[in-house]
Length: 461
Image (cartoon, rainbow, N blue to C red; front, side, top):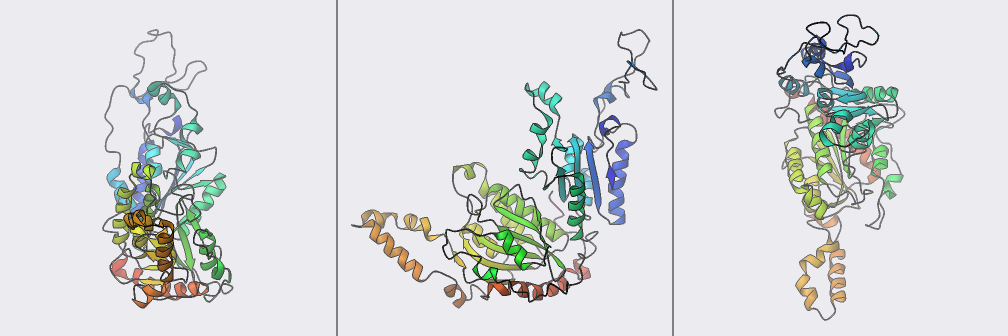
């Protein structure tokens, strides 16, 4: 653990300060243990004071300064003096560190400069509401460079960075930030050379626990929503769901869970989002980063599917959703850990179908009776596929209703099950038992000595 001391020149890298943080990061690699940074200030970044030479002669200026002990009315301002080119900032070391040990950044004050860079060079970051801010440069620099005044909170508060993915989670206090850090690390091994830590099964939470609520959780009406987070909590070990990034990429849900004491990653779409869980550019980035994290630290994945496809519309074309979507598709195909897929409801379009079948190899997959799958959702798809026929029909409304009725007569999981496009339909209440029985074998795979090594692709922060 390395902590900044803001009371000492704002945490700048004067003297040996910069070397201490680097020493901590190198130790974490050598000892194969997690690295925790308590960020407050520039975290070893440079100071303009380092470029100010000392006064050569007394009386040269009416501005008097102290050279040793600070005297009232005579502040110390000089540093080493002159222009200088900083050396390598440590990116090569960060590559090695991020690919081998967990790195957590706790933002506990105003974090700026190289401190801001460190804040995003990790696997998890948490900031404290109204205490922490994050920015490349603070309000004085912004005022000089951009010509407008802005407060620290407006420039880099949680409303900015917890909602754009720079910081994962928001804590209400420093104590809660510490608790989140401990919980995040509790799911991960100390390094990639170990398997994730398995807890003893809770005798009060049996693997065959059946939650009746799961049977009716998904509404019969397809346009209605349901609580995916509630579904995750009902299936996983009680109290084990830890969500990561709840305030950004909000069309998707990612986090950690346990089944029978075994840690797993979980990904899902949120149908309560304004676009029904369709994948946005931010949602793709969020999924991609979590997939990389789980694959790096050998966590099997629980893949819960209720996805209508990529988000559509001008705003999503402008943000490059399909470019981000392509990156997510490749990242998903590159995952090597075992995946347990549950098709809970919708799987449509390129995004939905990639969610359902991310790899060409065999993976465990089950479906719920509410499964509704296809190349494109019939709602809206009829108009696209039968535009000419509807335009030529004497009664377009009747023709559309006829086409829709024929689709509805064959819609649902039975056809794909009969063609073995889906492997097994289960009672939703039995999902926990299926995952608990599967995860033990999944851990036999991820715990094999040949698997306990750095990921070939390393980690993309």
